[in-house]
Image 1: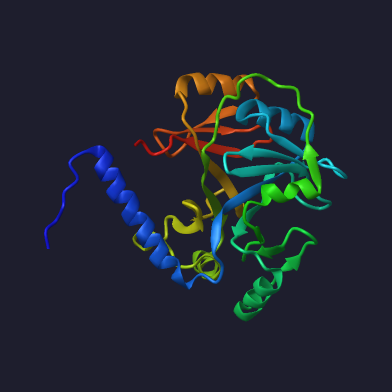
Image 2: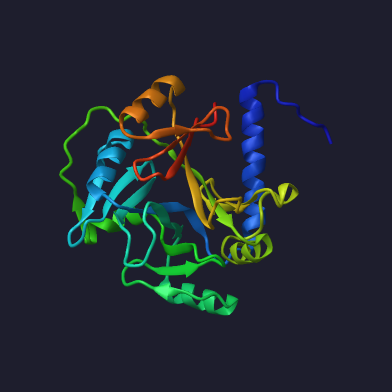
Length: 281
């Protein structure tokens, strides 16, 4: 069989992307749920108003607010982030949970699948099911594109424009979860998300597909760290030097990241956010 060698960077990228998509599709054949994306992230914050002000300045002014409580939602491209004070006895200034969007979500069918796998869950009226991983990190299983469902409980927030947002995210690239036991967590997430998509790189970081090109990564907890969601990563076009100054002016703290082309910062709650450029065409 003749091997076709890509002649340009554009062709090479297209070849790589097609191969990666085919690989993920094949590996995800055993997944009990079809996920369209990492639908959203939920942040537990101390000061909702301060947090909303920061996120609208950095990411834009598309904001919803719950009608009966202080929870706000800020759009991040096709995904979004929710912000609310921590519940009683829960830690604050953390990513409380992440939500996976299930295509054609049916709560009864989802419950049956979880029961068959021996996975415990908690039903939350109107927002699907919450499943704790072996370290207690919560995974929400709900409908895809749940932003469109927020109109039932939330309304557009009256937020004064702060001018052109610093970033216009094209979506979530990944989240990274710190875990205490690689084998236990791998078994759990394989049941939910399907096969590992990078088996050769274990155990440094273990990656799964979250649907829609999004990824969920596992990393063994390091010294001084606790299990839980370490950071989330967005894709967006940006100029690093100007963005660093602007997010610091907005209240963030620039920190060292592990992607040379990216930028990492702590938001006003101390939550680690990473931004990387979209794949060049």
